[in-house]
Image 1 (cartoon, rainbow, N blue to C red):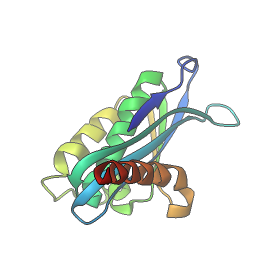
Image 2 (image 1 turned 30 degrees about the horizontal axis):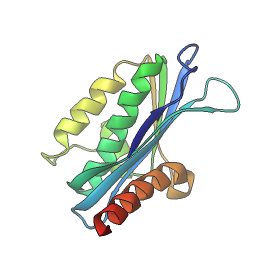
Image 3 (image 1 turned 180 degrees about the vertical axis):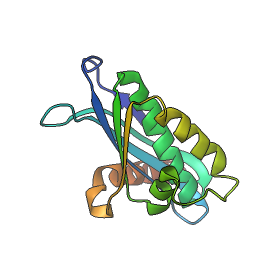
Length: 154
């Protein structure tokens, strides 16, 4: 649906925070991703970009990883030295921290891509957040899935 960047924020971004979420309606089923990329170098935080799109048929876990990868790829354009990732998927965060192994073969390429993108930063802060703290990313997921469902009905 959208992958929107906001011009004028390309310089002096030191810390980026990504809120990301993915979901599927059915598991697997039609899936969507959402990510909000924020410059948190100053108060108040500034929205740099948003991602909201469908990714076809996928599991919830694949959608969660794809949301993170898309958010990280979008964030890479802003040249920050520190990245903060916030996600309501405990599995995703624990795997990125190395606390859980990535056993699912379908997740392994997405995990490797996420780790590659995270290595570009001097500092990485990964945190599991509750769903109530991730409403913006969740709304982007649902907006993408709703738009796709509406288009399919027409």
